[in-house]
Image 1 (cartoon, one colour):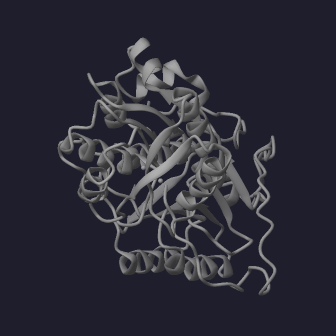
Image 2: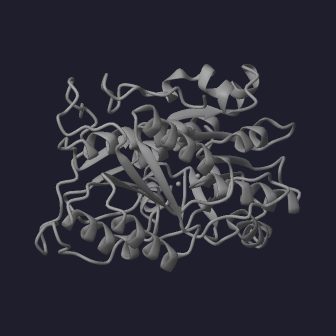
Length: 374
């Protein structure tokens, strides 16, 4: 849900994001414009959605976009924001950004400001679902299209975009199994109640049922304003109580960073292999440093994700009927590949793995596409 600082700095982070994107579950139902109680939206993934080939009559130069965010410190969120902003500007639009930085009440107030500004479209990037769902309903009720990234929403008229979290978990767990053919004793690093992380957890729980040579011997993870450092504190104690741990799976990269710190504190870095989710330049540096136990991650390119969300917003703002749900595929990124190809940062990773760039997703000639990272 992507907070991404160096390991030594131990991550001053946000309260309400992930990674690699992290949205909390909504409690409500029956929102304005949504389904009747007991009739949820049909969130069938429509990755084959294409905007019309010709520029819609509703498109206007200088269209306005309000970007309502819950971001955090670090290069993941910076890349996501730059990707989204650059894509909107390339298409001829103007962006006003509101960033609550972990303050739910502030995000609601900023959402009010965004609605009052009457933009052509609103993008919601992360946030507490119970806080933003009523504001999403209000915006849609006033005729403003809304495109949402990684917030578990109920309004069927909003477009929901996320990473393919089940696929992400499957990719990294398949590699963990391949990398440890004899099985292992797992330290599981996750937190509950966050939509993408819960989706990944469901795949992990099935993995344990299907692969009895792997057993969970420890569990920790802290979701706070300092995810890595707080997770490290929990992890140091949990790992000390489980000295036989051989592998660790972390549901997103700040949790992986906390795991690395905890392993170091327990002198276990050479005994435990770490597997994670999400990628950034800081993550790449941690994976490739000498002696690093971080073996692999499954991830999307945050700048590319921001650009995809922005393209969907451009289409929605132009009056195009957009799908209810779209997911963004991830790639498996291994420590071996990074070292073999001399990858030291995101620009080099994009060159090494061109599949991270997905120009065909929400692609149209009238939406000039950026090159992520440029």
